[in-house]
Length: 175
Image 1 (cartoon, rainbow, N blue to C red):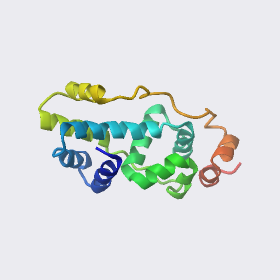
Image 2: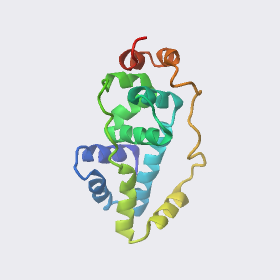
Image 3: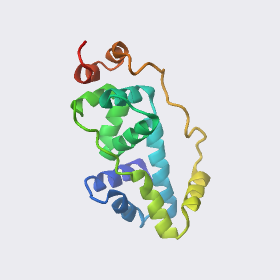
């Protein structure tokens, strides 16, 4: 599984009513190694987006963002596709171009579960066996590391204005 195929699969399922199931069906013809590879790439992209500045941007967009909320936010960025994901990770302030005040951030479809569903269908094995296969294939040692970047107070409006000027101009009330 490579980055291009990953993004093609993600993009081809956008807007599908049963997105996770549809993506799982698209993954089923791949080898079990590629299905696991899809999950590892998903995890890589989640890790790439695990940045303090992006969390601050999410916090500004939604008026507060918990750890679980930030997980969902990163997953929704992946689900939006390659260009929105890469642009947002590289420049969190660019999210001001993507969203408007009062507009809901798209809820995640849960594609994190697509590889699990495909793998268990293809192999007939359990969820635990899937995660064992993922762990056995994973060569990285830094999964689950802390967020990258310098921490700052997301509720400090002056700090938000300094770090995310476009988002602040669009989403923070004037004082």
